[in-house]
Image (cartoon, rainbow, N blue to C red):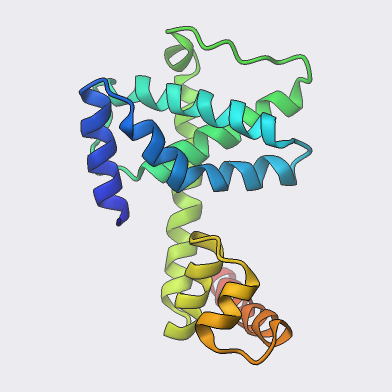
Length: 184
């Protein structure tokens, strides 16, 4: 299912007040939050809590007059999740209490985190679009579809896991070079 279809389905589902959208968003985007939280001194329970809080904020935001249906929900969910986790890390005593006005009280901060996340993903997509098609597919399988190295080895018919890792490294290096050239 592509991103636009996921957005439309989730938005329509939220507006009907049924819970299918939560499941879809969890399945598609929880991995990003889990990876971020685990990489930043958190555990699986922290990631689940932050992600659930992010979905509640998103739910409130969908009813905000400023919300645009074409906006990528992945940017919102990951931006809000990162914002919540970083805020929790800054203040170890911070516990997210989701009251109805949370989004409105923190609207500016949440919107800035979302905008930063959107800029990051837009830039990353531009870089990915400039690499070889083989690397585009490989990067998408590894980082977007969360395939492990054994699955990559099998799909791309690499003779060993080591060769698959090397190819992954070469593809990431293509992106780094394009990014470096872009920043000069």
